[in-house]
Image (cartoon, rainbow, N blue to C red; front, side):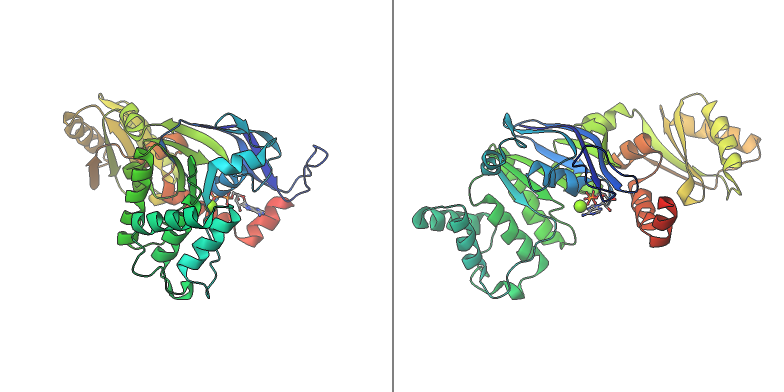
Length: 346
Ligand SMILES: Nc1ncnc2c1ncn2[C@@H]1O[C@H](COP(=O)(O)OP(=O)(O)O)[C@@H](O)[C@H]1O
Ligand SMILES: [Mg+2]
């Protein structure tokens, strides 16, 4: 239903009008390729700054890519943006909602923008009020709405024209549990009714619970893709996180990594640097744990903390990138330091 091919987008550092780009810009998308099957609930998972919003804005024809192609339902979005907009509903990450109008008035206005007839428009608004549980407050002014109410109203506005494809940018960020559950329920219902739903999120649990397909994106590229269960299954056995002691440097951690690697039944060992050098590994069966405790103790590296779990999407992320999603977010926050940026551009 949606096909993004080799999308590139660079912000700043000279617009790519003539093709060539000056250096110093931010490469928000770096060859992003993605296929969203019709009728799926597809999650785009990635840390802040990964390029999710940029990709979704390009898909919704609100932003032009530097290069690459976008097709929705077989229609070329760059050549025929209006046709694509009819197929799509877009719920943006941050929306400025009018404070004086009521929710219902806002939806009516939006319906007029879509050229819906008044009776069809009002009927559709009635359906959406019920679907999204808005009856109690829809006739109050938007100025007094909570984040959850606003989000539901945004969602209703995106659904007014019954789009075949609904695109949502971080639909539940900052919401209370109840609003989040309500939105999840609606998205599932839409998918079950045949709508293709594409949402971005930096919440692993959200994508894991909700999506039937997902792509993990990092630095403007897809680094893993598939059904959540398949991605996790591909990682094999249980995950183990262990700490030996505080390592003073990466070399020492690397030595332990190599040692663990020689243990039978241990599949992958990744050093997680950001957390005082813990080690993440995959084991083939439970018996492996006793074995590796023994081997480490013999090397005078007794284990002092060990946790075992089934594979999660965070493990998929860690496997693909060598760090956890949370660490990636911290790294992005760090790189936004203006001094660091200035240095990087010098
Ligand atoms: N309008 C803009 N001007 C300059 N840089 C931008 C702009 N929008 C986004 N970026 C940068 O592009 C990268 C990707 O951003 P974005 O698509 O918003 O990611 P996400 O939605 O995954 O957090 C980030 O490094 C961000 O700082
Ligand atoms: Mg974003």
